[in-house]
Amino acid sequence: MNHPSTNSTLIRRLALPCLLFLLGSFNPLAERLNIVFILIDDLGWTDLGCYGSRYYETPNVDRLAKQGMRFTNAYAASCVCSPTRASILTGKYPGRLHITHAIPIQGAARIKEPLPMIEATYRKNLALEEITIAESLREAGYATAFMGKWHVCWENKFYPEHQGFDLNIGGNNMGNPGNYFHPYDGQWRMTPRHPITRWNTLPDGKPGEYLTDRLTNEAVAFIEKNKSRPFFLYLSHYAVHTPLQAKKELIAKYKGKPQTEHHGNATYAAMIESVDQSVGQVLKKLDKLELTERTVIIFTSDNGGHGRITSHLPLRGNKGSFYEGGIRVPLIFKWPGKVKPGTECRVPVISPDFYPTLLAVTGLKERPQQHVDGVSLVSMLKQEAKIKPRSIYWHYPNYIGANHPGGARPCSVIRKGNWKLIESLEENRAELYNLKDDLGEKENLAMRMPKKTRQLRLLLEQWRNEAQVQMPKHNPDFDGK
Ligand SMILES: [Ca+2]
Image (cartoon, rainbow, N blue to C red; front, side, top):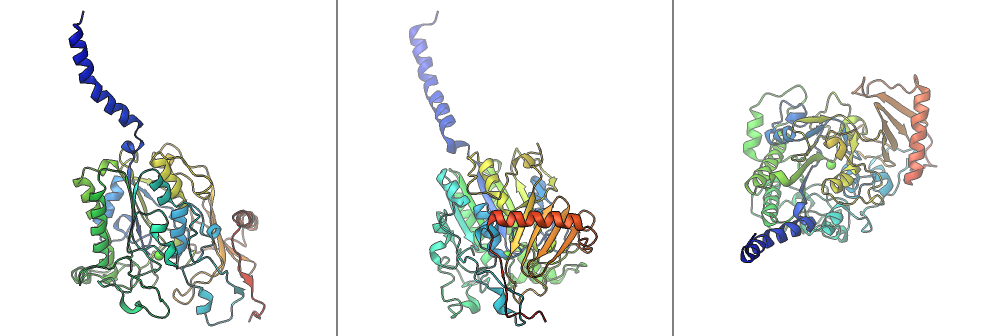
């Protein structure tokens, strides 16, 4: 029989640990994983070591791929910046959002010849009514930060701080920095075409400071500051978009390196290496703070690389095109303890999928009314099951303009299994490719396979109706010559 005083001592000794344990089980924040979402601008499918380049050097990103899952059929929701970015934030296709081109470009105005269609006047600001992924995570107690290129609005009342981010470093309405070196503004500063001060969200800095490094330092500082609570860091580098500008020593390194068959621009390579160093710094900081095991890292791009700078062969096309080179992008997903290191996923996935996936990864409830076009990738990340077969869609009722020769004209696109169909909205014409046999989209099978072509066009039409996309209109002044 125990002595009463021994019992009470025991109770006293156990009370505090029990209370802490119970509090821990009921505290939803205690188990929440951190999220670091790294978005690179205009980084093409083959622009990394782990995606096949032997010229560009990306040891840190390659290491990340070895620690996580590398997707080989990941797609951006558009072949240009703003639509993909809006899609990541909302879980909706650009066509549904009516944000279908790079804000504020109406490309038709930049084309001299008469055009058969009048392009859609699309939305130039991501609506505040959208509940962004940042708003969902902040609501669940996350510290949220946006760093770098935003480009989903034209007016400053739609900046990141109004869309769920506690902190906005450098995010504004512009698609590229006038200059990658401080004070960053370059030729764009306060011109009549761009009357809004670009860098009002990144006012300070040191002479000679390089933008990619600056954003990295800000990211690392944010991680340090929020190490004791769950955080969502959206590190959206302006790199590797034009203007081509990099640090001298890195350019010199690549100038001394033999070019490969498809890659050989030393400055571009140096910009990519700075991005890679950025990833390395973030990984190092997480390690140092012992946060690595509770941090999910996603690395991807918003569209293909620039055709005048890099090549994505064997893929056809580049940024500004709906051939694979314009929309197929790198995607690496690291989820410690859940994603088996060094795995690969070949199933097609697309920008709206991030939203429901991140909710599932962090144990938050889905918001099906919001991320209507996304599917959670968790079962594939865990290698438990493939997602349900589905078609994925693109819609582009616009003209690229003159910057990307051979770029997109009004079209809708569907990928279903290995089949991909690009439907022209200018004329009654479609291209059909079997990506399994013809990754380079060289052989248009539409004439040979009329039944398949009809099926896919019908699916596209049904989807356009359901998503209530905007359509271009026929130009009554176009005489067809
Ligand atoms: Ca882009």
